[in-house]
Length: 375
Image 1: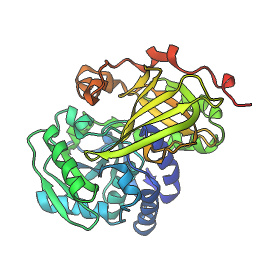
Image 2: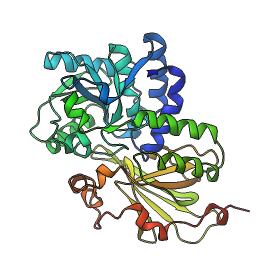
Image 3: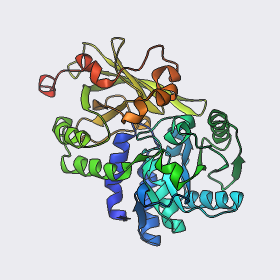
Image 4: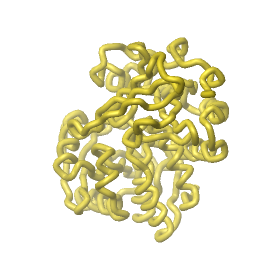
């Protein structure tokens, strides 16, 4: 498949939906990708099954606090510069690139690198959503080493990484991102085509395109979108889509802590009063609670939609007064395995409760839309 500039808006919107609030704001990355594709021609999007087993593949994306990217704007050259720096560092050419995560900005950065460098981008990613730390990628869980790796900052400065574990790499790359302005582009997790085939969450870029087309076709109040979205998820590797809550944002606060955007948002029903929803944020929406009861948690997906347009909202774009609908989606089955839950369950983020699949929490979800519409 050829990725042209005219499909990027759908891809961006769909990937923001799957990113659960993280992955970086896509707006500037979308403009940069459109410019690169117009100048360099379409990028080739290929299935992982079409990749040779001995191909040399790397993951590429942005690392840091997403709020920084709203001010420290990326360049159209960052992705290609980082890839070239990596090739110079390891002394060999890269055959294809793949995304860390299916996140707004981080879904587009590999496309820029692919188009600029004349190599394909793989249809899939290492999370099937966005998650805040490197050891949470399926690549790392499958045993792929994160280094050798390189990071490039906004001024073109290059740093290289060698680490014995992914947890060590995560600490080092996070600290370096803070020291280099808060956000860097990294090339990491080099692997063979065979390794990628056994570790990737497949077809998430084409699924993002499908979600984006649905969002465009059904643009309007969020209650219109749930049925077509639910049907799409039922056909996918994901689980059931659930309506969690609808209301207005009455409190939202965040700060950059340890290289992450950390905060909380509070949403109350339109009519005021009644139980409120609390969203805990660490780059992504991690946990949704009503009166202390968890109604959805990582690794399942929690997505906030603008109630008036149905468009997904990145965590760094959430603001007081917004009217929103919060939905949850069951994560891909891989993330419910014992080995994956060992690094992505709520306790891995410091919460003192176990993971409970979202479909087992439906009794705590908000009633159907018809009971909630104002006026």
